[in-house]
Image (cartoon, rainbow, N blue to C red):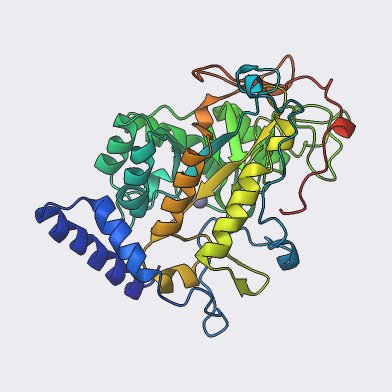
Length: 387
Ligand SMILES: [Zn+2]
């Protein structure tokens, strides 16, 4: 982040402080600011200035831009019983689940996202790079993170310095520091963090890195898949038959307990900067893409979405692919609420090493998952082509 952005951010914080003194909540500020900023040019080309990609932007992320407009409408539910009684019949019930992650410890997540989450009672998982916190005004402080935890948010580990793990393969000590010591660093602040998040989604396909992650953590999360399959069957072009870490021929499986698949929403891709309304349509499609897999009262797939920075400033939006506007985030959360999605924490994902499958825990009411391979891949409908 350059100086200009820091200044902008500080001005925003200053504005909130002033408004707080005047008795207006940060959410009101956020909503009023975002509604006024919606008149800016959403679709400004990013060609005039090279976009500064956020830390978690996947370097090789590609979206077929022609597919981005194909999924404006959600696919139809596959429930076969349209009768009113079917809504209380678990055999026909369509459960819709999502998990919300926030990476990197941006202050904006506390200032802007949390009040919106609070409106709906939603809880989220925050991945924290321990050594970076409180080192700049746009990162959260430890009291900030305590506020999240005290409201039952999930705090997890995201290395010490947001390291690019695949660049550290020649240094086992550095890998151990970034991966292992980050859990100790968070423990020193009072947080037990059994889940690890790979910065920039780098390293989850490398056995050296995964073996160190496995030494310190129960689970780990990376990108980039629009849906996470509870039995790890159904990823496009993937042949794994369960969620074991390694396949029979000794290769790392695409999805496993150290490779939980999430997705960030990048609005800049293939040279195009998608506007917030365009991103909302993509969000709706992606959230509903789980429906065909969850039609028997059991969860077979669901999206894990990862957010980064939030802003009311359209210039900041235009310059960082993973930055979302506050008003778009509010619109997305309202959509989830109005359409009956259940929001779970990532730490409600459990792994069964006997069945080699994931399950959902501590959900009230309980949610049953499809864990066995009895659901053959051929029984699953084709996955949307969006990555
Ligand atoms: Zn990150």
